[in-house]
Image: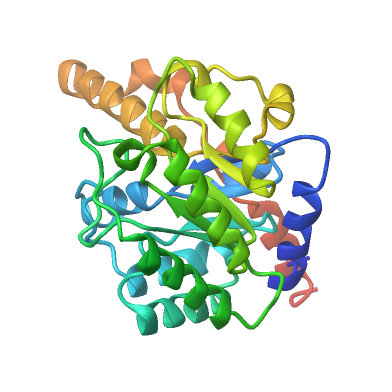
Length: 296
């Protein structure tokens, strides 16, 4: 049974209120979302970086627009009963653009989005160098516009700030607290690899006093955290943006090397899904069972 968007959004809220962090593996297409669901996870994350690579073949340099991302997210949300958390970059423009961003992602059936305070054109936060961010007032107004635009109160708006690297953690926490005061449901302070990153996470959670999402693929000690310990450290939602794109890219490169050198894929069979396994991952049997109702 396909769950309604509101049901999935409420499901995400219930998961966040639980005793364990919500682990959301990163994907960039509907096939990845099916695999995440089949593996027993409770949420899934759509990475803008991965979408830029998969649909455009470009790095994450702000070329994915609202129409492309929302249409892609709609198809993914429709194929899974997991809550879908989606990267919405900077909101794709000014105040009116942000209003439409909320409308489009709500209509797409997405459960949550995060909007960041980078200046346009944005770049992946994990690229070298600090990102240029909006001034304080503009960043706050951006989130205020987002929270004022939603219709379904269960649609989660996560306010992200990329200012810690350039302006310091104190300022990032100040922004995060202001975002919450303007109606954001959660905050996402983007951090760089650091020896004291875990202490920074604890401090953000303690001082913001709200739901906190973190990118746990940033490297260092954060990337080595085990899921059962995350909640106690201050991580309510843990996203793995690089999982799908990194694993697929590595496996595909290795497979292509083998095909190029040997001329066939015989040596790859044990590293590939069989036809039956592939069809099972997509739920072919369920479609065939449904079809039988009309031809009995």
